[in-house]
Amino acid sequence: MSKSRNSRVLVYSTTDGFSANSADRQQRKLWLRMERRGRGGKTATIIGGFTVSDQQVELLARRLKSSCGIGGNVVDGEIVLQGDVRQKASALLRQWGYPVG
Image 1: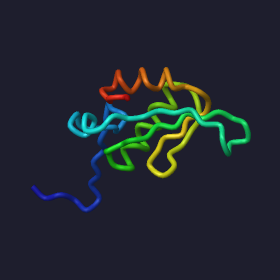
Image 2: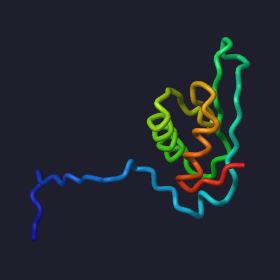
Image 3: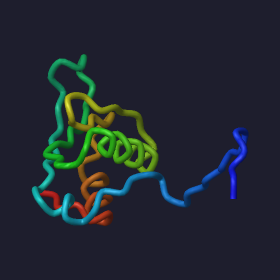
């Protein structure tokens, strides 16, 4: 069977693209802290201790931001979320199989 030069394949996924396996998740506990310093008095929740790739941290950050309904980004391999959402983020991470210390 020969493929034409213009053939295209469209692939759909039912997941959000985050596929860290359980071995990566269980290697080390994640930590969460609240920080105000250097942010103009605004509060931020910092999550670190990841052993997965930077791309997977980006996907996890997107998933956390969506689930918490807040903004944030990834800086130097750590997830920075707006506001003090330590309890909610911790509960979500545990629900998704991440050990939180």
